[in-house]
Length: 213
Ligand code: ZN
Ligand code: ZN
Image (cartoon, rainbow, N blue to C red; front, side, top):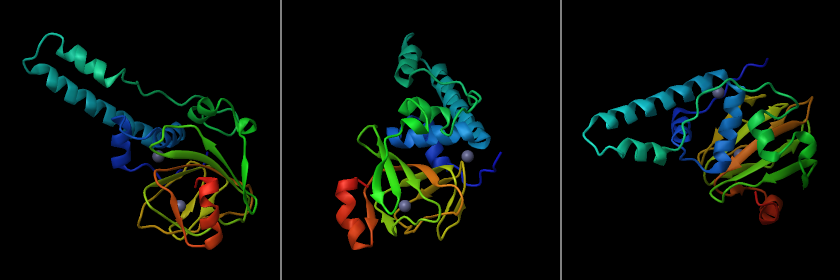
């Protein structure tokens, strides 16, 4: 079992527990949570916190059906459960999402051996699987919004650190980076962005609209 060193921030985890994230971000977080005991425990405590707030609101004088209405608005709370045993490369939430494992992915080439598969999510953010051959770099880029990158296989490094299986990199407008896949296995990641990337090279910039990246 590899050690996960890069986790979900409190801010993101709270937004996730509140159901306030775009679908693409929720998918990345659900996938990380299924791989990470720490974040799953933290998510459960945020859920408990939400429950306590709800109890508080139940103790004030309200109409009989107020709590019911409140619960209906919140939807059914999900009890924290241990992750299902992993079969294949993709954790369960991702397998459920794409309806299979690696063999079901329809990759499209991005050049230099890098491939992507865009996943269908709501329009507030985009989710994609990325396949980066060992030793290959992703063109230097900045971010107009938030980029979440979860490593599923292999590893990559940028100026900030190394990211291995289960690690989540949270990039924002401040960060410009050139992720490079480590030698060894190809690096396969699940990434979500809520705004187009900012490439410094001309060719990636020209290709950007075609690749929707
Ligand atoms: Zn974690
Ligand atoms: Zn990036």
